[in-house]
Amino acid sequence: MKRTVPLLITAIAGFVLIVSFFIPDLKGWGEDAAVWFDILAAIAFVLGGGNLLKLHLKTMSDKKPGWGYSAITIVAFLVTLIFGLFKIGSPPRSNVEFYGETFVSYPLEAMPEFRIAGELPHREDDKPIPASVRTQLREENGELIFIGWMSRDQKSDLLKYRETLDWQCRVETLFTASQPSLLQDRVRFYPAHTSLAFKGVLTEEREAELRTLLPDSETAKQAIEELASRTRQTTTIQSSGIPESFKIPEEAKTYFKEDQAKITLVGPLSPELQKEIVFNWSGFEPAMPLTAEQEEELFVQIENAGRKLTDEQSVVFKNFFAAEWHPDVMVAAINTAGIPPQKEKTACELLEEQQAGAKELVLELPTPEPTLLNPEQIRAVTRFVNEPGQTVEELKTELSSLGEITAAQLASIDEFINGLPRHADVLKALGLELLRTGPLTPEQREVLFQPAATHYAWKTDIGRLFVASHQIKYPWSGSYTAQGNPFWWIYEYVLQPLMTTTFAMLAFYVASAAFRAFRAKNLEATLLLGTAFIVLLGRTYLGVQLTAWVPDALSALKIDQMTVYIMKIFNTAGNRAIMIGIALGIASTSLKVLLGIDRSYLGSGDD
Image 1 (cartoon, rainbow, N blue to C red):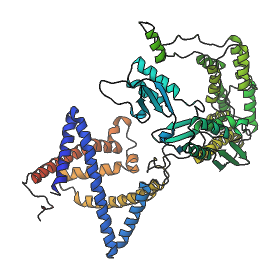
Image 2 (cartoon, rainbow, N blue to C red):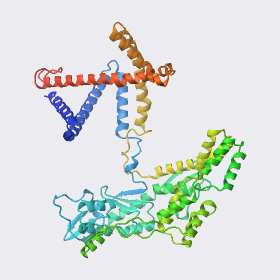
Image 3 (cartoon, one colour):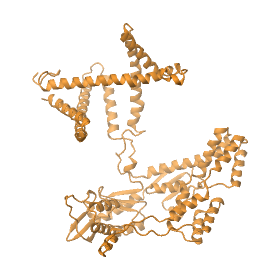
Image 4 (cartoon, rainbow, N blue to C red):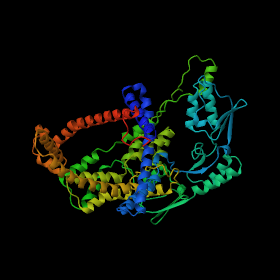
């Protein structure tokens, strides 16, 4: 029985997999069978590994011949198992981490409650409320009670729960009521994690605001104190070099400091702040179009740093800057931001119209007229692009004084400028283009490539600061095969070389045995020997070079192409035939054992 049951499970799973492959309606059965078969296989591997471990331990304890190899095997097994199982050295997955946020444990029961009049709707299919709000939303005495601060995802789940205006209006009202009155962009509560999170540094002023949002309890007091302590942790790294033009804004000097080559940060670094430090604080200017005088000045600077540029390099230089963007591109970006997006009415607005007697509801609000730049504002943008010296803030002030401009348009200016490549990157691209057509002296390369190298080093330093200041939420979420961790190192530099050495040595033994076995005594042996020789030669560099002279029209006669053809056609067909034969043989043997026609080679349970 102990041998029959696993065999029976395997036979049933195999039969279900075969049937589900040909019958699409039974695809789910095949997936379930595969899952259970994987579970059985995992158990078998664990038991098999334990049995091998026991045999090696017994070999060592009895001091049998080869006990040293058993000791090496056990040590290697345990080291690999520990590194892989505990994911030592594996960084967490970025898609599950909350960068820039700090967490503390906080029970759901200690969160504030928000109430509105209303009831939970009844569904004909008796479907429960969404799982995302199941622990936070309840109905009591004709009121809807929500514990904690509702997220937008939870609001979306509730809106889909029942698509009636009455219910959706209640959801919108409850969502508005359950938002924190302060620190809306910084404080969050994650019910699934029972955690309170804060983005950035919890200063004393923000700490006082957070205390007003939470109930006056000992639990809240301890959580806020712990959160404040964690967000005020400092991280210091040694920088490879701070850019000369680097400048810390006044409002950031309370949490970001630099002292010679050391950078100190208070609290975690968010991705948005990281980008701000790399591109805006560093002083690396965006790549604005160069005027004719600036192009000539750069050309002279490059030539004065070394040798004169060749005629081809001079043409490349002129063509490179001829492809720069035009001020009209920036004007178009600002005007596009001035076109207001189409906004839909809220469910409460639609419900009010419906109750007022409207027969046809219009879902969208009337679209306001777009706000476009006037001629004076366009000239101001053109001057900003073509005449250097004006800052972005000065441009915004000038545009506001010359006519109407929306907040979205002002924000689009920052977005456009921040989206431009840095001038250092443009110099690097120019240097690469010049090198394609002629040489450059070391001094000229320094002029063209040093700014980009400095910027890259700065980005690397801030990247290290970003990682060092991050407070990991899920330390075991990373992959055990992540590049650079000990498990990857063992596989890459221990197992792979050993396997390569083993197969390289095995190849000589196989070749020797094959030469003795495949002697051309008859037609079949001759074909087998010739095919093996072509495949073996076609896998080597020598085989490719031997027939490299064959014209493309006869490329099928090249040894490497013949190897591909043999492996793709004849070898694939042979493998399939062998596998079909093995499958039929296993099925036949299994049925004989199950039906009692034949006995297992292991014997019966009574033996």
